[in-house]
Amino acid sequence: GQQLNQSPQSMFIQEGEDVSMNCTSSSIFNTWLWYKQEPGEGPVLLIALYKAGELTSNGRLTAQFGITRKDSFLNISASIPSDVGIYFCAGQWGGTSYGKLTFGQGTILTVHP
Amino acid sequence: KAGVTQTPRYLIKTRGQQVTLSCSPISGHRSVSWYQQTPGQGLQFLFEYFSETQRNKGNFPGRFSGRQFSNSRSEMNVSTLELGDSALYLCASSLDGGRIDAFFGQGTRLTVV
Image (cartoon, rainbow over all chains, first blue to last red):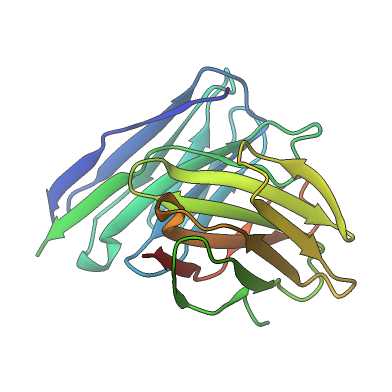
């Protein structure tokens, strides 16, 4: 089945530093999504990408849909303590893959003030 | 606009019992997907409903079932609970499940003892 490899698994950074994480897939996806999850809550959608090569920003967050359609990355600039959480990438193949997202394992982000 | 609402937030059940979880999607969204989240397996797709029809299904045993009502609200049922069913169950809603901007609820934390 489709697998998503997300890296790094965890990051410990100082407030103000930039962060970069990525996902690679063994299969092509038509949609890439990035979510953030905090303890006890459901994932919150951060950025959605629909076209190969697409670069989209949401405040301090920037994500790109890889040209091969098999990868995506998320950058967070000037991190702040409230950025702490688990970040997930998710891909959807499309076609008859209704409602089905395949998730990466997550990147645990810790920000030291 | 109200978000995705899942009830109950927490449940404790005994092995062998059955459980029903509820999800009310964002107003106007007709696609509801269900996911199971565990520390070991991460986020895994259970099934998707659109217009009261199951369009897609993940690799879970038949003990896991769902349905959707005419107002797009959805329920999932797990029969003959096993200890391994302990997880956070998440519901996601989107307009049509095709090109997804999937928004998640807070989840139902199920503990099987």
